Length: 583
Image 1 (tube, rainbow, N blue to C red):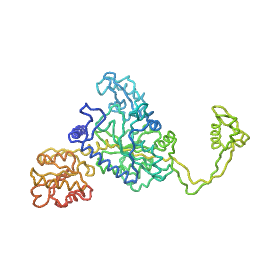
Image 2: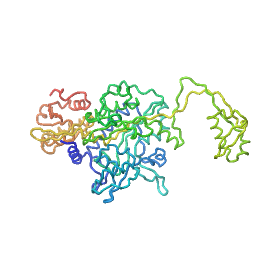
Image 3: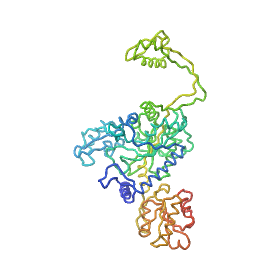
Image 4: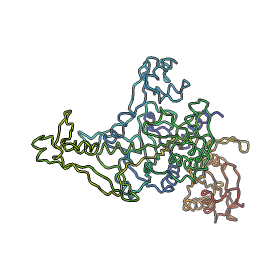
């Protein structure tokens, strides 16, 4: 079965079984917005809980929940209002708008048109005589415009304060850094996580929940000392990874290198040890939630693709429909974000670094005679003081003569040194304020959910009948166990409902189903990925046992009701394997 066929069947299954479907369908629907149904919401919640357990709790990091709407100055400082653009091309025939880089990538050998200059993309569109995906109209000669992806809104009535829906959860962490560092006792390194919605006004949403206008991110911003030696890699150094490094991409041979985190950091393929650490942690985590690791890789950003402030950046990618899609990004962002918000807000985005031993330094200072500067410079006296202070720090030798020269509003002025109060004094300091660097693992939850479903999709034949099932990991499956009475019978139904209640009390997700024959009920649960089914029959009423069926193998065992909740909990936790159970 082709990858495309799987996607088509998966989309239909997702709608039929309540995983996800287009929102507002009663009103015709709107592109780029999806509702997660009962199964999808549960799977999404389980994935988020698993991420939180590993990257927040497991790493000892904080978690916050910031607003999704933030004021305009935040995004002026972050650069989103100036640079958060995609390439828009409009069809002259039908008027539909499309992303020009996507059209190029879908119809030419160019795999990363997003990183190309607009003029070059226009030339490619003309050279290949590319056409509108909607109507087939020619696009050659059409101008490509920059389209900002930010969703604008107003905060408050009347002359409201401009605001925007956040395009990423990261900014909610960065702007609160001055307070968050206090919670971390001003000690580096420390991390802050957030799981929440983000919004991007995509030109052409497509491919189901892979590219949408509203989506969920799980992000970790890890703050480190720029002079930090890096993490202890011993826990991940032997983790095997498949790397598609920049060198392999430039060689154009498509080769993926299989190595370990330790080797890749040692030979410089992964430039930053912190990035390497989180790649190793993520590799193991992705496998635990059901990503097929034979269809998974880390791809390094090319120089032209990487943000100017990022020293190293890798994407986690999964293979879907024969294509590789980004499901997470790992970047060393330097001090760019905190520096920009410090500049824009005037607040202090630094941490005090304590020296091992106090240091004695010389400091050049000025204490100007304002009785001289006031009459001499009037309202500009304050600016003169600032200029003198800057000159003292940058060029103390300038104060060695009788006069020191400063520049004010493009004009040079000489100030008697004796009127500046210039002095060089020794001072003992205990440390210095530094701007931390940021390591950012950023996960797309919706794309991960789609990947897990796609990689879990399977078909086989049971008792001469075709079967569709989802091989979801027990940890994330939306329903862990289905409980059925064998047939319509008051005693069987009462016992089945009691078992369902007891298993729920043990913290496991349960569905009770008495509709249709038992084979049909098994098929329904297989199709939504329920790992185990429990059937209550007449033998159950006699000897206190039930039939427990395992999803993937369809194998069945008779197990005692008294221990059932405890046994199922052990199966979910991975403490026992189904085939090891006696029954």
